[in-house]
Image (tube, rainbow, N blue to C red):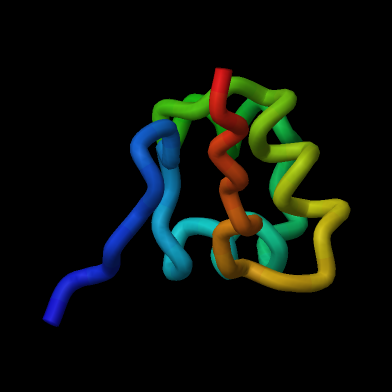
Length: 59
């Protein structure tokens, strides 16, 4: 069964784990995975690889 990602997710658990394990520079990883370097930096700082809970606020 496939992963269920929230609507704005650009990465999967496997990609996030690879970003956290890798020692390569941010720009290199970003280019390799088609991500923004800020996204790579964000996932490297986190201690987990699952999506954060998305809360929908009614207008």
